[in-house]
Image (cartoon, rainbow, N blue to C red):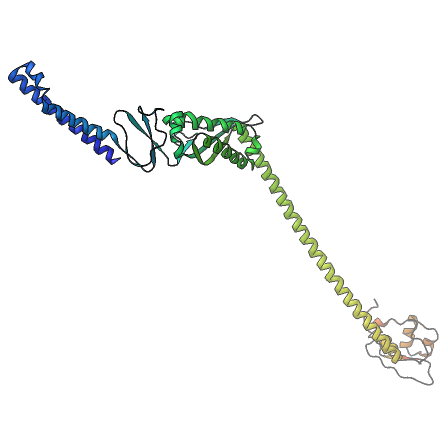
Length: 382
């Protein structure tokens, strides 16, 4: 690029200098010798040699071109049978025939073409998004980008087919058309779900194949954004709110179930603990009864002692034979207290022990059937 600029500046400078010199020379001759002599002086050998030198510099400037590393050149030539050189010109200094050939430079670096609804995001000012219809007739708005480059060996073909119009006349229309075609194969719910990835993959495959057939290399197709109509977006939002409400209710129900299950587990554990305690108490009582039975079997008088021990604590003295049951008649208790002991034993009865003193003495007598000493208390019988 610097070489081309330098040669261009040099050529223009030479022509300007030559024109100034010739003009000054022509005017001087014109004022000194006249109009005819001035024109005749232009054919002077020195002037012709100067003209040839300027043309040579111009020819050299036009014949030497520099192609930058990120570009490749196509030479259109009137001296070639096809009107164009078959092979693209690689980077570096290249020679072309002045006034008979012309070099066109094309970039071979990666280019990104974006179609977006945002006014300043894509190459075209304004809304350049793709409006498409889904399989079920819904409208979607798609923003996308295509990353591609020109195949070096196919640059001559691209120049013949598209020149520098390949983006506006091929890439953009084809991408928009294939996107609309593929979107129509999906329903709107599929595009709004996991099928979006399938759509992007499918578009990438189709564009890669078609661009390769035209001399382009596709790096990546990017499905940047998919927007839906306001009506569908509102319905989706309402559906999501309803699903969220259902999820919240299910969560609350699950919490209630967990709390109820925890309460049930707690009750079950408490009941099991109580049952275990009752079992332990029952086992202890059974063991106690077994030991009491063993003790009674070893000492039969123990029952007599326990029976008397359970009588009213107001009973002070009781003399009974060993073969008489311990049943006294309540109406005879007062007579016994007045000293008529013999009459109190004639009929067995039950003693109300709530009015007897707490001291009990038992002594066998050989002659008296029963002797009872009772001291009354001031309390009433229950």
